[in-house]
Length: 239
Image (tube, rainbow, N blue to C red):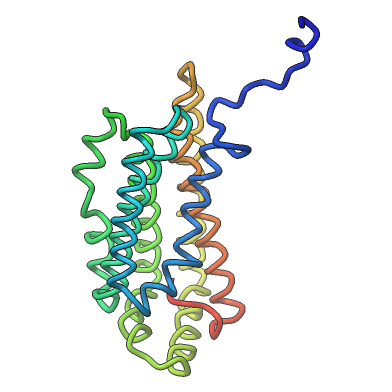
């Protein structure tokens, strides 16, 4: 018995199945890129309804599941806010880039107050996602790419390809590359800060770990789309 206890694998504090809570947070950041983006262009209304489904599943899971499942339920509640905001914007307001962050921030007051409640994990996910979106939009505005946003949304596929090539020219300017690189460094510093805050408490604060995972994954996705837009503009979207 003692031998088995000594050599037993340590319990993962955030484990949900075989994966950790930060892993699921990262997966939920990636999901809209492959699922929501094409869905909302075809059926924005049903995409919005799915956001409500996510909210309901999250609330129910948090209420009746075991402890680890409750954490995932709270995470789903935060994700539902990001999904619903994205569906509203890309479904009906996509040609108005200045409304992007305000629409995404529709649940900001609830998320801030919810940090001190049982929904802390979901609020951390939502706030980190919103912060990542704000950084992305700010980079687009400062590099001049945002001026092409409405035209790309309204253009045909062939015209959009040409406009995206123009956008790539904006980004390839030395000043733009410096700006984008500096923002990437800032986000990495925020990721490190969140990770340090998580480790300062015992047990580790899962909300800070979730925020770090969301910000880091957002940076990776932005880097992927930036590389794609520079190497093959005809294959990329605006964001």
